[in-house]
Structures are given as C-alpha cells and as structure tokens.
Length: 228
Image 1 (cartoon, one colour):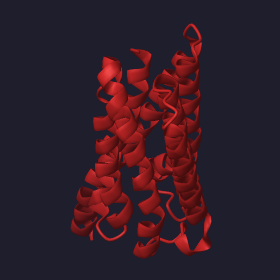
Image 2 (spheres, rainbow, N blue to C red; image 1 turned 180 degrees about the vertical axis):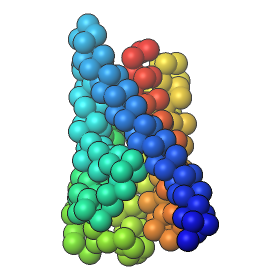
Image 3 (tube, rainbow, N blue to C red; image 1 turned 135 degrees about the vertical axis):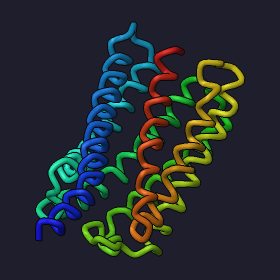
C-alpha cells in the first residue's frame, strides 16, 4: 500500500507542477494584457491608441470568463465543480476573440482609410456575425468534455477567413508603419497555435499547450500599438 501511494504521489507531482505553471502563466497574461490596455488608454489620446486600448479590454474581459476557471482547475483540480463555468467561458471567449478582430480591423482602417475597404468591412462584419452565430448554437456542446469536431470546424471557418482579411490589411499597413510590421506574423502565429488546439485538443490533450504561445501573440499585438 505504501509503495502504491508512493507511485501515485510521484505521478501526481508533475501534474501539480504543470498545473501551477499554467495557473501562474494565465494570471500573468491577464495582468499584462490589462496593463497594456490601460497603458494605451492612458497615452495622449489618438483614435488609434484609444481603440487599441478598448480592444485590449475586450480581450481581457472575455478571457477572464475562460481563464479564471482554468486557473482554479489547474491549481486546485476542481474540474467537475467548474465544468459548466469552463464551458461557458470557452463560448464567451470565442465571441470576444471575434470582436477583438473586428476592432483590430477598425484600428487598421484608421491607419489605412481607403474607400475600397468599405466593401471589405461588410465582409468582416458578415464573417464575424456568422462566427458568433455558430458559436452560440447549442450543438457546439461547450460543456462537454469531448465536443463534436465538426462544429469546431464550422465555427472556425469564418474565424480563419476573418483573421486572413485582417492580416492582409495589416500586411499593407506594415509597409507604412514599421511599428506594426510584425502584426501579420503575430496574426498568422496566433491562428497556427489556436487551430490545432481548438480542433484536436479534445482528442490529443497535449495540443492544449499551444494555447500558451497563442496568448503571447495577443500580448505582442497590443504591445506593437504602444510603440506606434
């Protein structure tokens, strides 16, 4: 019996370590994102930095619903009790991430105000509305431990297209504003990390670790606006 307890403790130790690491990482991310957002809002006000600050606050507000339950689960192992909160948080974050990219598009329009982009703005809103509507449908089974893969694909198709449109805009902006030249790379990296985790983490849990570098790309996006 003592040997079995020793083996169990040895197996649980790495889990506890990584749980506390994730909790610390998520907490630091939220604090840093909030700092960058409030810093942008505290700067001498320009429409670009003000909207970028609001964009940061939207990001933090949405991630709070998802990450606070994750922090509690990672640190204290309350997965069963917080299952509903985790599912609800995933849904809310999926919507606020969409709003984040719509706001990022409008920040880009302030920097690149071409008339031809009005039609693309309509496409941005259509993709955002489609993504939001799909995220709110009960078929996503957000509270399930193994949500259906097909619905993860459905809701992420318009999201990827939305990200692509925004990335193309910032590809042009980066040629004029060197401080934002890395934005297209940050967007591409965020989706490269997000998609495998969003689509396959239910089957391959280790892919969930990709959400850590994904969050860093969002901090990078906010930081770029502080240097503009």
